[in-house]
Length: 218
Image (cartoon, rainbow, N blue to C red; front, top):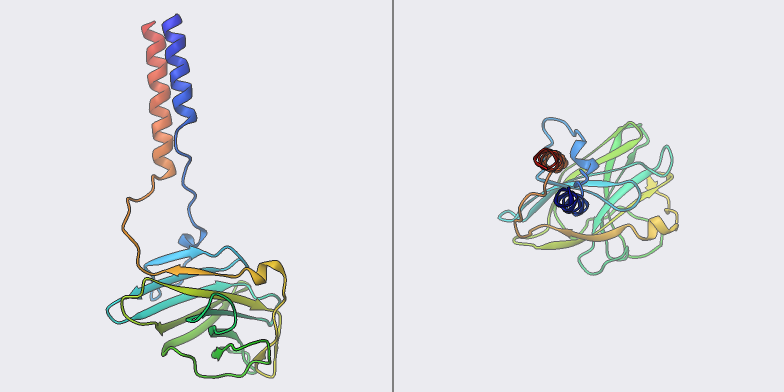
């Protein structure tokens, strides 16, 4: 019986050190339609946003789908690359919102500061710009020519509450808004896929069966 107790203690300790289940990203379950399939996605850490992307290093083209709820109905969302810094100033921006006719539009802005926005050409060539509004979320699509063999880019994203005369009105300056920036890694080393939670459950079940077998032996 003493030996069984020792074995049980070892088994319990092993259970405690099993790796925790890997949480699935919410973006993995987002359906963008049969014609919009991307290689990678990420749940961004602020503003309930997510990004899907495919980077073609040979062509230097980054195709993206940015999704976020605007700050209010009739508001706007934006996603940008900043080639010169990590904040808003210098951001080469794609912004999506409803136009005067009620249809979704995507416009480009070179953000130089906090002055009123003016639609302008950005530092990157763009293609296939489009936007959709569904279930309270704006989906912004586009392809940006960022250059060949890029490893990473500085990304900035934002949401606002209103649009006036076809121009996005300044966003809030809450902590969540100010923190909406980061690095988007385009090329990274291939690593083994993380263990799925189902595999973890099977390992736990096998271990428990083993413990029961030991009790039968002793």
